[in-house]
Image (cartoon, rainbow, N blue to C red):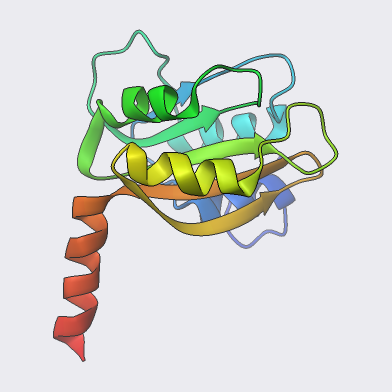
Amino acid sequence: MSTTPGTGDHATTLVDRLGIESGMVVQELGYDDDVDHDLRDAIENRLNDEMVDEDSDEVVDVVLLWFRADDGDLVDQLVDAIAPLADNGVIWLLTPKRGKYGYVEPSDISEAAPTAGLSQTSLLPLGATWTGARLVPRRAKAAADRGRADRR
């Protein structure tokens, strides 16, 4: 599998859209047998390293949180995911698509994110099985909004 941007490889294109770049530290939470292994491989190829797991004490640029409806309390999972984030870090909440086992209602995400101190900024379909919701700490969203307003 090629991981060069723009080669047309679907998983690599998704890594581009996730904003993951070489040298970043990416933490993976909620790993299980049902994750998208092609996407994981493409991310690790881009990083030229493995993703760190929940036991890491590193500050991370991105958290990939694989979450299914039966994985417990979403707010608690999101609060735990915020802890290692760098100031400008993001959380990609990866949930099964509608009709797939473990599907999470969008309303559950839109209720849990603000409770955990996060704002949802976008949604991204990730293959046939998963959808990604990009979540940022509210302080990061406010700073980004200010930056856009300053450029106008």
